Image (cartoon, rainbow, N blue to C red):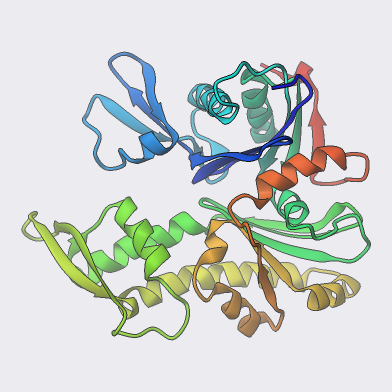
Length: 341
């Protein structure tokens, strides 16, 4: 890797995505690390660590590196990001890259500093911070420098970031703590309530992807799942229907739609007109929830456009933002290395 390669990173609650100038997307793995408590060291990160969810013995701790857009353990996050970067470049030595990293729209100065410090400690020469909505729009190719207003809803694992952007800057923004992981949790609770069956996070995540829908539900759409009987404590399998989780999923989706409505209500009239013309851009893994785009259109009267690469567009946008730094305003900043520590 050249000393002048730029790297874009979306260090998300669910997944970490890394993009380089030369190779494009080079890493997309869960933001997890497994710690050996006895030896005090990391034994697995990413996919391997995530596969241990719900299965670790007492001597191991499975750590989610990000919680609601915040770094949960700074030292572990630094070490894991360094491993991710090494994996991303095929194990070759990283020579002082410029790193552009996404941060939630609601991130405080302390949280931004933690994110920047993590990148510096992983070997960055320069660090740029790009707010998720701005990065998503740039990755979308939506033309954020023009005076036309663009609205984006970036639904990650821990937060949903909503923003209206014009002339290279964020005009209005909102971050809500209702996102993909909340929908997964609501599915776990719904199954426990209706079937008296406890399922793990991995099973619930699969159900969300394969079965959950915001369209009119039906009992004819079914899936067999396995879990732990809440009464006997024994293993049991049941067949669940799409209808049985519809209400739980819909309640969380409505929270997101209401937050979008709040932002629209505060948006200046001229920009509202642009948004009505351009539509609302949806990004992040949560945008793939079946029927969410139609729910937004029906509720708000504005078409919703889902990114063709919802998982990667924020990292790609963060990378592109470096080349646009002279034209970007609110939502983008270069961090001085003097802020380290």
